Image (cartoon, rainbow, N blue to C red; front, side, top):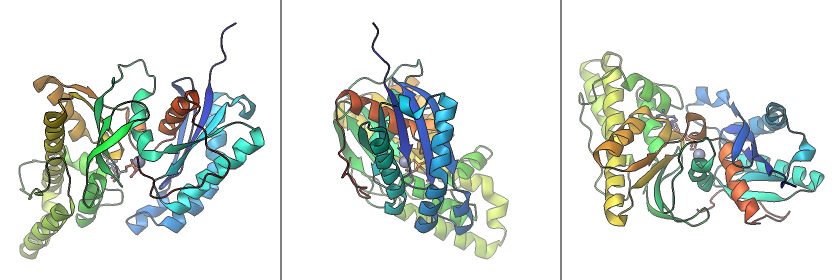
Length: 339
Ligand code: KG4
Ligand code: ZN
């Protein structure tokens, strides 16, 4: 008799997206994401509003994920949820929901580190080649910028990270200076396609070999724009596309320079990217180019697995399930959880 497939419900609520996914073995059957539009008008995520929106969204999002997957609650083998890092109020909603559901269904509960999830998105089975161990993963999101040395499914070492802002913040804060809506990363990406990336030069940080820093870049962009706007009040409007292209080019050059250094340091040439900023078309194209010029093997996730999603939590849960790494019912959210 063949063994029954493992079916897992993943839940992600670490920031401003409420997401639920159903996985069968390493394949994703559904991945529902409810974005919270409410933060747009505030220019950033408002934690209190985020947790309230998670409370409203979580039941319909989970029901939708089960419905699309055509799976009944009783068929689930385990519930995997994001324990941290993230906004505490947001994490609490997913954590308490996952705990109650696992208790009600009497099935194991699996706590997942959000950053582990971003890396693990590479192991979702989509019929494509997957990285083998060891590989390097550049995890670039709104809250983190890390180069991770991935030695196994569970052994991941951060070998370089940002000293201040994350790459996603660099995109979002630059976008704010340009008067664009939050989150500005995708808009910079969109407008950059029509601009000249060499139109403006911005300063790059001087930090360690595989460390990042983006706060100086933000001040430099602000200075350049303020100075030019004094002479021409329409400076941003007149140069929006070139500004976006130049900002994106600078951020990507910083990321690439650090990956180059990490490759030199470790000798590893399997390079993966993860996190919201890995949706950036400039970064994706630059890495595809490096695959040819540097003979790297590059791994780029599907768009829906780049930004926050529960599929990545479900796949982490799947590997932890097989290794019997379960949480007990007293597990609590951890806003500052380390990888
Ligand atoms: O991983 P994620 O969804 O949430 C966190 O864990 O932070 O990342 C969100 C970040 C935001 O800063 C957003 O602006 C950025 O990812 N982002 C992008 C793009 N899509 C999302 N940045 C640049 N280009 C994009 N296409
Ligand atoms: Zn994330």
